[in-house]
Amino acid sequence: MTRTLLLLLFTFGACKHTPPEVAAEPAEIAAPFDAAELRAGLPEGTTVLYRISAPDGTVMYTLWEVVQAGEGGLVIHQTLVDENRVALGPAVVSAKSWEMLQAESLPGILIETLEPTKQPMALGTLRVSGFVLVNPDNAAAIDIFTFSRRHPGPAIKLEYQLNGELMITVEAIEWTVGPR
Image (cartoon, rainbow, N blue to C red; front, side, top):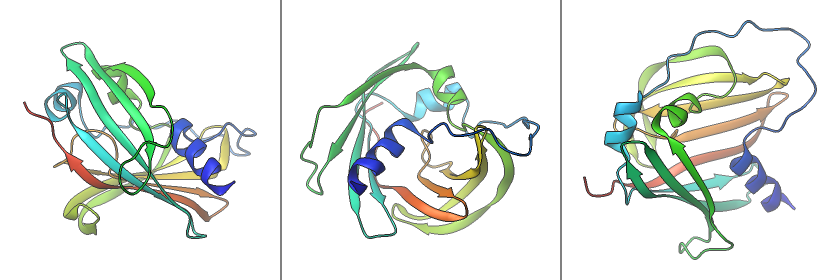
C-alpha cells in the first residue's frame, strides 16, 4: 500500500485537494534553469536514479531516462525499478518541449526561497538552492525542491510534507549525463 502511494505521489506530483483557506498571491518564480541550460544539460542518454523513501522505512527507486533530445525538446522514460535497476513495470513516457520542462520545474505557489548553501547530498557535497512551495489546491501540502547548478534538469531532492509531516523524500542518488 505504501509503495503504491509513494509511486503515485512521485509520478503524478501532489494530489489535488480542497482549496487553501488563505488565498496566496502567486509570486514570480525564476525557474532554476532556462530552456537553453536544460537542453545543454540533458542530452540523450542522460539517466537519473532516484531513491523514494517514506518515514516508515519503505524505499523504492525510479529511473528517469532521456531517450531522445533535440532542438524542440526531449522524451523521458520514467520507470519504477528495484535496487538493481530491474524494471518493476512499464515506463511512463512523456515528451516535453524545453520550455515546458522549464515551466514545470516549480509547480505551486512560492512561499520561501532557500539561499544557496553547500550540503552533503547522495550525489556528493553540492552547492544547492531551493524553493518551498505550497500546493495551490491545498495549503497544508508543502513541497521543498532542491536544485544544483551542476545538474541542470529536475530537482535533485524533493520533500513532500502534509500538515507539517514529512510524507516522502525523493533524492537523486545517481546522475549520468549522456554524450554531448
